[in-house]
Length: 400
Ligand code: SF4
Ligand code: SF4
Image 1: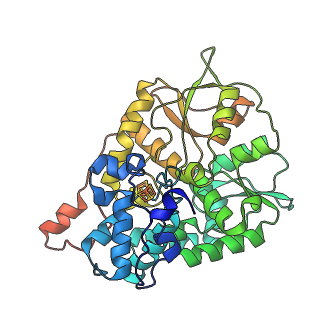
Image 2: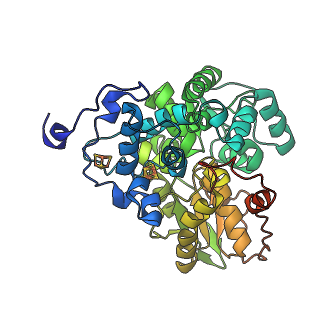
Image 3: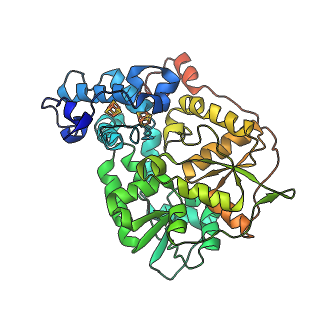
């Protein structure tokens, strides 16, 4: 080996929590620190990728007790955005390390209850189907060589996205009897269950699987293979599909920014494709920070709402300052995060999925527009109330 890989120090044999080949790769150079959103807001070395890998090594070798509060805090404060991976000269696969860490740290009763509840729902395919029936997502009876993955929560939260995909790709199959891809499990301390769900989905949807969720795309590709899975923008680029029409507002082309999906960008390195598609139907506006995490990060916005908002706020300011009409998302978690928080601000900027933008350009369902009423925020500080009643302490390590 040449270069930085030569300098690394092997971790002494330990508890067997981490794959030593993954853990030993870090050379502690610190190149990843400027890319890390939690380091940016905290300026604390322990809340950086290098600091967290140091904690993982201390856990592995037994220098830190398993119940050390720093381990609980940092395994939860990390967004899992993998922005530290593309900038790492040693090729550290931080996302895999984090999965191994949470498999250990969040096992059994240590798992945050909201994450446990969501995983239980996602595992029940019959429940997901029922949710889809009520919300009327796209569905087809006949199978085909290319299928659309509906996602466990996207089909309920944003059923219009699958309908928009059918507008763009009329021949794509959308079997309704499909379950969760397991990304939720893999990111919340149940990685083996996550792989099992991905394999089951791979059997349910033969051939190429197209997904409108960047996080699911990265997880599925990791289990089923890169050739089986394509995120929507990637699929449209690979098949040479040319977007039709334009999105216009009062006679001018709409100004449209993007919010990258972390796992799509940092895991699968897909970011040029959605930008090219936006540019084909509207005026694409690059906005500083459009490539960094929006604070949704799977279950993060539920587990650590205050940190999630701290990471999101400057991004919303930047989108508004850029004067864009829309910010495009390529992942339902980001869509939920941006849509809800822009609405609460009464912002004139609307969050729309890429499929919705392209379908609207082609004459499909029109996009929302204009300033909305500001939604008054009712803050209920449950933690403070519980503390007043002397019942606090059950959430340390995962709740902000
Ligand atoms: S994770 Fe990579 S970039 Fe960060 S300190 Fe380790 S080797 Fe350097
Ligand atoms: S995954 Fe994201 S938040 Fe976590 S250490 Fe890497 S860059 Fe920082």
